Length: 123
Image (cartoon, rainbow, N blue to C red; front, side, top):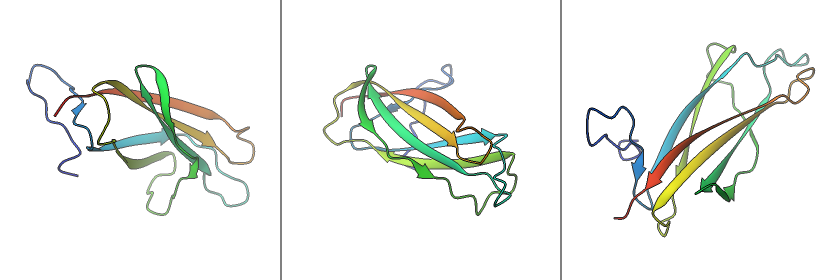
């Protein structure tokens, strides 16, 4: 985790997300107000992460169901993931898109998507 976070070069800039090729990127996200599944009484959510380079999809993740075993508040689900960048990644602008699908009965497969941009810089 210590090497997954890029420190700002200047304290005047609130968020600088620059990584070297081969870096491990850690990201955290929160899901609010997921529907409760009638059968289990808990949310049923799947998540997938896509990677874009200069607006073009370069890696599409497979949907995976979110493990809720350590969640204290099911109305505010906090989870995280890691992504290792390719050691041969070209420098430039990238974005990670997180897509969450609510699988609970009655949720009508509600989908939410967010993204965050970052930059891969030369070594």
